[in-house]
Figure 1 (cartoon, rainbow, N blue to C red):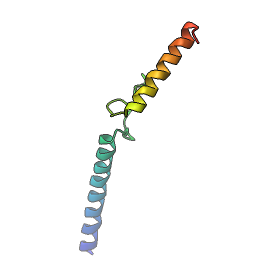
Figure 2: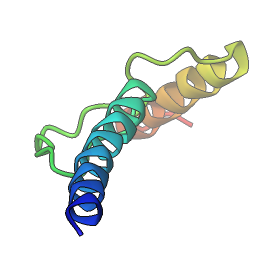
Figure 3: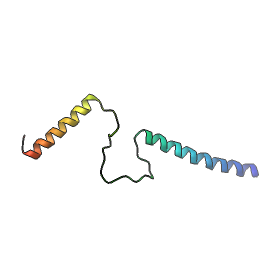
Figure 4: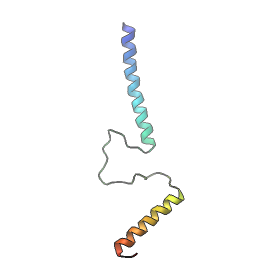
Length: 74
């Protein structure tokens, strides 16, 4: 019976380590950790990521349209 208890204890340790590894992988891929507090300043979810040229162009176009609407342009 001591072997079974030792194996269960080892299983718990490995599950904890696996959870930490999964969180580290998610963090490296740009996902927030479940236990982390997110600041309220609403940072960009794209920060630090490479964007395609088409995506950058679309963002710039959207910013231009928003500025035009704000100033009363077309």
